Every structure is written in C-alpha cells, then in structure tokens.
Amino acid sequence: MADVKTTGAHVHGEAAHHASYLEENKGIMNWLVTYDHKRIGLMYLWSVLLMFLVGGLFALLVRLELLTPGEDLMNAETYNRVFTLHGAIMVFLFIIPAVPASLGNFVLPLMLGAKDVAFPKLNLASYYIYVVGAIMAILSIVLGGVDTGWTFYTPYSTSTAGAVTLMTLSVFVLGFSSIFTGLNFIATIHTLRAPGMSWYNLPLFVWGTYATSVIQVMATPVLGITTVLLVMERVFQVGIFDARLGGDPVLFQHFFWFYSHPAVYIMILPGMAIISELIPTFSKKTIFGYRGIAFSSIAIALVSFLVWAHHMFTSGQSPLTNAIFSFLTFLVAIPSGIKVFNWTATMYRGSISLKTPMLYAMSFLLLFTIGGLTGLFLGTLATDIHLHDTYFVVAHFHYVMMGGTVIAFIGGLFYWWPKMVGRMYSEKGGALSAILVFIGFNATFLPQFIMGSRGMPRRYFTYLDQFQPLHQFSTVGAEILGAGILVAILTLVASLRKKPDAIANPWGGSTLEWEAQSPPVTHNFVGTPVLEHAPYDYRHAKVEG
Image 1: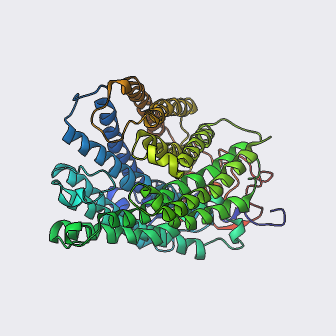
Image 2: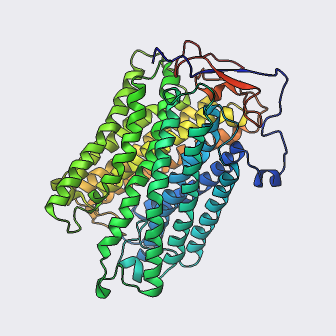
Image 3: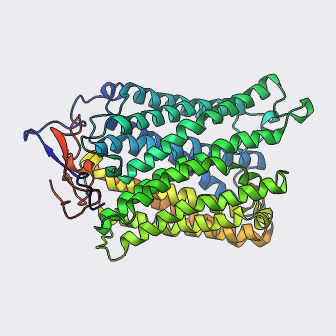
C-alpha cells in the first residue's frame, strides 16, 4: 500500500463550533422522525441491546434449569419454549442486526466521509420495520410461546400448538429490515465515498460491511419465502413439507439453511470487520495484508452460499452430496484463516496498548479460533455422525457467534463509544468487564465440548447423573458471563452522567471517523474531508481534540 496516497483525512472548513447531532433538535419526536444515520444507529443500538438482555435472561433460565437433572424451575414444555425464544431472539433480533444496523449505521458514513447514507428515509423505515418485527416476536411469547427451536424444523413446526405462525411472520418482517439496510449500505459505499477514496483506500470495516450487505440482499429473500411457505403449510395444509400430501419435510431444511448458513456470516463478518479496526489501532501498526483481509471478506460471502447442507449430514443425503459439502466446508475456513493470521502478524512487534477494546479483540482471537477449529470436527463426516445434535454443536456455535460476533460487538462499542456520545468511560470498569466475560464464557462452554463428545444431546430437559458436574460448572460460568456483560453495560451507561470529555481522536486512530468531532456535528464534518494518507498509516495519526 506504499503507493497509495489517500486514505486518512484532514478536514478543511470553518473553525467555528457547530452543534453536534445530540445537541440539535432535542426531544423524543425529533429522534423518532430523524433521518440522521447517527441517531438511527443509536436507536438500533438501544433496541438490540434490549433484545440482548431479554435473550440473555432466557439463556440464564435455561442454565439454571439444567443445574440438576429433572424439574427445577420449569417443566419440560416450558423449557422447550424458553430455549426456543432464547435462540430466536438472539439470532433474529440481536446478533443479525447488532453490528450492521447499529454500529454500521453510525460509523459507515463517517468512515466514507459522507454526510449520511444514500437513502436516509429508507434507513428510518428499516428501523421501524425492525421494531414491528420485534413486537410481533415478543407477542408470540405472550400468545402461547414457541417450542420448535429457532430453526422451526418441519414436520413438528407445522403441527405443534403455540404462536409459531406469528413468530415465523415476525421473521418474515424482520427480513425486509435486513434487506433494506443491505441495499442502503451497498449504494452508500458505491456512491458516497469521499473524493479520492478508491476501493483500496476503504477501511476494512467498510469491506466487511459490504460483504455482509451482499449476503443480506441475496440470501434473506430465501428466508422470507421459507417462512411464508411454513405459514401456508400450517394454515392451509398445502403439502409442501408434508409427506402425507406428497411433500418433503427435509426440503424445509434445505430452504432454511440456504439462508441461515450465509446468515452465520451476516453475523460474523461484521465482527471480523470490527477486529480489523481494533487490532491495528491498538498495535499502532499498519494492518498486515490489507488486500488479503479485504478480499477474504468477499470470498467468505461467496462461499457461504455453497455450504448449507453440512447441517444435514444425517438427514439422508447421498454419500457423494455429503462428501462435496464436507469439502466445501473445509474450503470456507481458508479465508477465515487468512484473517486470523494477518491479525496476528499485525500485532507482531507492534506497540500494543491493552485498552478495553483491545482486550476484547484479543479475546476474540482466541475464542473465534477455538470456534473455527472445532468446526473442523463437525465438517468431517465420520465425527459429525457422533457429534450431530449434541452439546458439542452448542459449544461450537457459541464460540463462533458469542465468542466471535458478540465479543467483537462489545469491543467495537467500547471503541466507538466516545465518538457516539462524546464521553469517556471508566477504563477499569471496561477492563473488568472484558476479564469477567472471557472467564465466564470459557467456563460456560468449554464443559459443553466435553459433554457433547460423551454423547450429551442438546435441547434435552433432563440428563444422566454423570453429566451433572459439568452442567453445574457451565451454569456457574453463565452467571459470571452475565455479570461481565452487566458490568460492561453499567460502565458505558455511567459515562453518560459525565459532562462531554471525549476528544476527537482518543485512540490515535487513522480512519476518517476520527477526524470528526466527538460527538460529530449533524452532517458529520465541518467542511469537506480531504484525504491525505494511506489506510492504517499511523505515522500521520495522532491523538487530538
């Protein structure tokens, strides 16, 4: 990248103070009808955090029930509903929109030197569609609950009682929010880059968000069609998934996973994009292999459409089909490995600062690597037969999703929090949260690898006595994890009681958002951003107010 002359920026314009977006047009109504991407991003943020707390509460209830075999807090039917709602809320209402819709909405235009997204009205509409979908999902809890698991597998989902129809319709509605957000970001990246900002001058967060948006636009319609077909099956008995009427229940799995495995990368790619910002900033070193990381994001997006059937090795597919999808599963690990090696190389001989965002980034590196390596066991046909639908899958999934995306999301939240609200948080509180989350997470899910390898099936209400010590250890870990997340939230919220004290660039970052004041003015920059240096060139970056 030595020959690239433009990626950092200096803003030329008026020196006079301009009101920030937080200071202008105060009042609830001004927020509810705003087209400002920063305010919409914050509304998304508070909404997804609320869903995170609700989904986390259900997770703690599941772990408390599993403290001992047999019935403790709830019966088997209630248990099925609780773990289903935990999964559905965490996947569809939190982890999919968390980074793109909240942090992405706030940061992306700033990184591009734009005043807003390409379609501000569509951006606001996307948020309200998300709210409608969330209300429908919460109503399904009140109107009988759902006990199918978050995957809604047929034939059980077409025959069970409860509010399955309302929950699947809520997923249908939420899909439109995801599609509109993806379209908006693609248009914004193509059309609103600052003058002189070529594709190879883009921050890696933008590359990751672009790849995520491609998946959102291409894969989410399949989920919409699948949920509509499921509703038609329940209401009209059309026979698409009913073998008695000439349908095929396994067809639902093909439809569902054709979306939902790319959706895994809708969840993890934004987390990877955040890590690509945190590691060079807190290592004070140019990112190693910029193009490798950028192109690997696109490669992951493309290959993600080719691996859906590795969820179905035990569903009766032909041996040849299983072998092909097993190979493709190993193939998708290559671009992920490129990222991990490049991040590690970036840290090598860097001037590493162990601030809170970097602590979360380093946690991500270890936890995501464990998640990725354990995926090799599930991608191998012989071992997957034994491990399928056991707690090994639960642990692997959480190491990738929680240990990857959620850890990165929290790290990104601490990283951009001063830019969002203009206030610095307690570094001690942030560090404590990172340590508690790391310890609690591993204590929760490492025992589940052992349980799964010994044959403990997932989603079971009770279990053999031999698994009780590991379940109890996992439950204690979940409580520590919950405490760490609570400390993180309290640390950030407590900073709001202070007077604004964040300077423009508290971390010495080199990307364009750090040239705006904290919090930014309504239209992001005072004057026009002028690009002056290469991406992640920390010779020119400085801590400044």
